[in-house]
Image 1 (cartoon, each protein chain N blue to C red):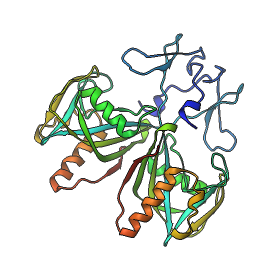
Image 2: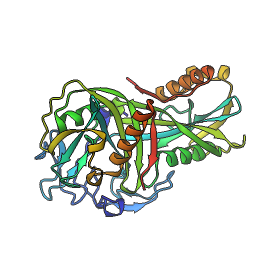
Image 3: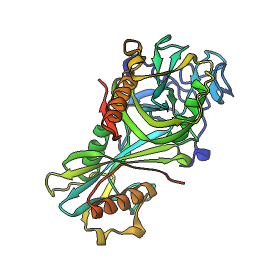
Image 4: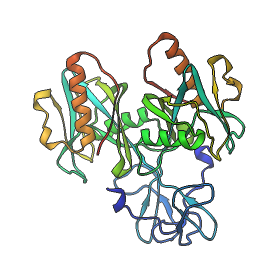
Length: 183
Length: 183
């Protein structure tokens, strides 16, 4: 969802009073501030964490069973939760969405999607078996050779960029870190 | 602040009703859910973005004028805001805290601090002049040679880890990406 489409905070999380939008002292941005108890409500970008799971030459993609982009293909990924590291979150999302058991490799891409307030981080990963068991958010999990990837049906631009970088790096035999801003 | 010390959400941001903590349908974590309007309140880790600004051989550190860790030294860094990329946030924080004008280099460290719900991202940066003009959050901004760094007075472990990795990489003449979990 675009930032401009987000529901604004209307009530104070601490006491329930209607908030006011103003720039707090010692700040330079408008925040939702509670006129009753003074609580300042910060809203910040979210991290999405995922993996590029590989079994042999093939890459694992998941067909989304949920909106947005229902029916399109994605790398396993989801919102980072409190209490876990980016690596742990990427591992959890991979297991939840595909059932794949993996060994996590290095961080591979860090992609900013400013207009939706997200940072996407993908890790390389090696599947330890070809077994798949997609969860409720996935219609189908499948391994693809590079020439089988359904490029016209990829759910997110960060997934597309990550896959393109992955195949390019694999061809030249050296993997780097990829950073980019997704418009 | 430790996650366990955070103030819990008590009222719905949309309608002000007292929330309940329960696991929503199609979820597996407890969230603050509004029994009146159904709004689910997600809380997720925050990104802190900063730089390792260099002028010649020297590295820029800022002495904190605010809590936490008032009076201790840090690399310029702060919370990523909506509407900016991690690189833009790092640039902004550097300017706000030190007045330094920089050219941003590659992403250098991605450090998870799970117990406070934060991910810290530092970029390498080259100062384009030695001019400094610290903002209200900084008591003093100063350039340090490696052997002058006040290691016993560094404000945060992520700053310490980033500085150690930076000097080690510089000695071997090759900079990489550093990822770690800070306990």
